[in-house]
Length: 275
Image 1 (cartoon, rainbow, N blue to C red):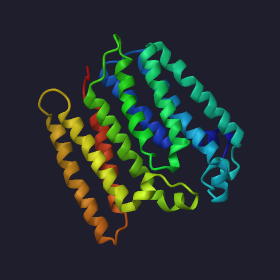
Image 2: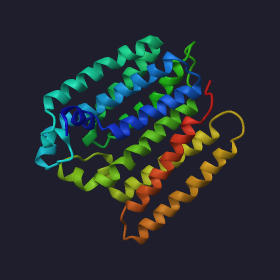
Image 3: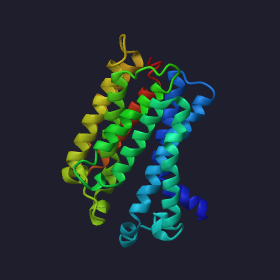
Image 4: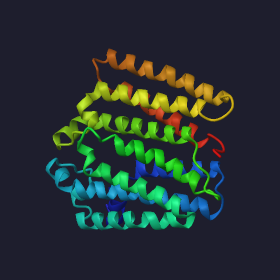
């Protein structure tokens, strides 16, 4: 693996890229045009690079002790110093990338970066681990709206849906790694609740996000919204039933939660004009 590829992998490109693309598509749907679309992409992308690189920089020693060969720093594919420097540059770039949109957008995207870093340290291994997800994911769509010309206020339902989606994503993201995290000393709220409790928390938060996205906007829900709500209501109980039939293994529930999370992301992207 080349050093450049290892550095990219250290940024956690899959979740970070998904968040960046989702917010960029939301920006297009909200009415951003031209350079502003690229600006949203770069500003949101910087927050995701920041949290990913700083996470691997902080966890380098722990990952080495745990033998995490999938981690570029732990495997020696890239140095801890390089990843840390990249994380610092990305973190410092966030407010500057928000400034072309104005002061308030710059403040909002900076807060996203700050709360994301608060997850990396010190909240990741505490019962407050979900708080940065709730705040940062609520502020991301708010940034997209406030960055529009005239700086309109973001609708409450959009901010609430983003926060609920972020909270659900936190529990869903940790589900497959509960055992590995326990071995490396990570003990956030999902680890306290366990696989069953985290599955329930993820399902409740994501279902609430679905309903908020369907019934929050003005006017009657669209047929697509009704279909999404019905699908979520059906998929989650099926995942729970499959999990109980598999002696409590969380795989089926994890897959059901991921399906609902994808439904929520699509609803968020295609929620239409939000101002």
